[in-house]
Amino acid sequence: MNLIEDIVEHAPSIRAIRRDIHAHPELAFEENRTADLVAQQLESWGITVHRGFGKTGLVGVIRNGSSARTVGLRADMDALPMQEANRFDHASKHAGVMHACGHDGHTAMLLGAAQHLARHRNFDGTVYLIFQPAEERGGGAREMMRDGLFERFPMEAVFGMHNMPGIPVGCFASSPGPVLASNSEFHVTIRGKGGHAAMPHLAIDPIPAAGQMIEAFQTIISRNKKPLETAVISVTMLRAGEAVNVIADTCELRGTVRAYTRETLDLIERRMGEIARHVAEMFGAECDFVFTRHYPSTINHEAETAFMRETLASVVGAGRVLAQTPIMAAEDFSFMLEAVPGSYCFIGNGDGDHREAGHGAGPCLVHNTSYDFNDELLPIGASAFVKLAEAWLARPARG
Image (cartoon, rainbow, N blue to C red; front, side, top):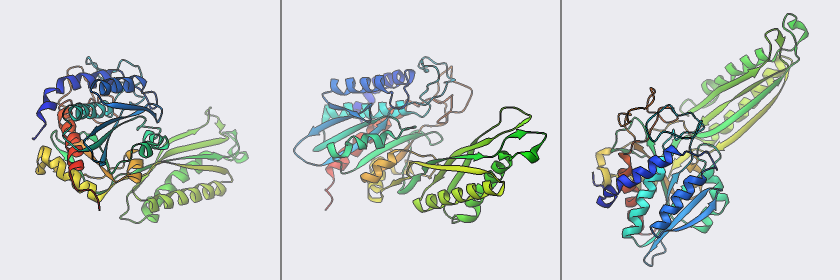
């Protein structure tokens, strides 16, 4: 691998920062300590810091030379509301909060890149370092944009990356087009008529209606959408009743919908609403149907992805830049890619053998209580961020 020597040399200090962030996780829009730590580090390296974007988000600005060229690099900072099962020294000190998705590592990788870019400034133009809150829930990218992110800091392109367990360390995965799905959720309230469970003929039971809805929703996937289009409808919550001898007045269904195209998502929302209303009516009940769209699909721009693949190959070798298999998880970097050209890749986190003594019994998967970011990635990801910035600002401008 062609890692930057200066970054490799400073990897232990960046690892210490990563583990400190891991030990002190913070939830969406509450990343105050993390943001303070990031700002302090950036300012100690002579980087101008702008705060107040998306509440706890911040942007570091490194300028050099006279060029008006610009590029953005993004990392997320928030943790998840989970109890960590790991017991090693840097495990979470906050009950019920855990860095189970590696955002501590993403933040540290971008800090490692920032330190090198500030020291050496081997570019002509401006690099914007975006430290974003609330990726897991809350749409921190959208909130930073609402606070004027791209108006204050115009960017020709923006790049991000996320660790991916199962991909070997030293490998990246990058492809154009949809790589992560949109994220929507639904909430159905079926309103029947409660009564004694021994006298069901005097009641309108909402639970059988819920059962029919759950089955009918899946026919949208199997019989309404195009077979080659990918989508998921998952009913993940069902709530009704408080006593075994009482027919409930209401039943609630909640869940998530994932899709790659807006056309498919429009179809699913329309058909779910029709099915919910008609099934409820069939049982003599009424229903309320609410469908909320959170994150759009993450769609990599073709030209920027070709550039990213070429740049990543200069760091790890062409054979280690893999095709990016799309997955149905969602990512709010999608909002940035709707506004600015760019690309989002996966960086291999390995299979979990890196975890120290005291890790939990579960696998090293994201959103798992036994997860931990692999510190071997820090100089790899930081080198990649630096190369992306330097190579972008060195290439001819569009047009």
